[in-house]
Length: 61
Image 1 (tube, rainbow, N blue to C red):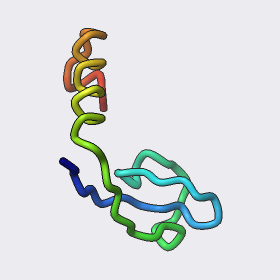
Image 2: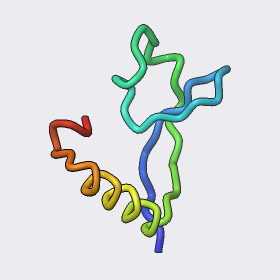
Image 3: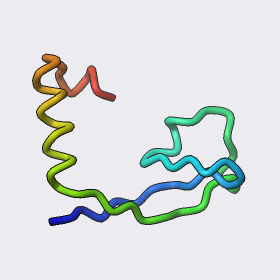
Image 4: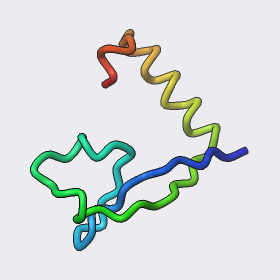
């Protein structure tokens, strides 16, 4: 099973983020909106890692 997520490609660099605010000092026009396909099993693995680290929602932002 897969999850489709909107992302933003930083043009001329090839870096994709899910939130433009992750990268500072970048203009909106420097991004191209893209779709990212993620395996649900990968998302589950990330959630388990976060849980094992004992992080709460505030820590993972």
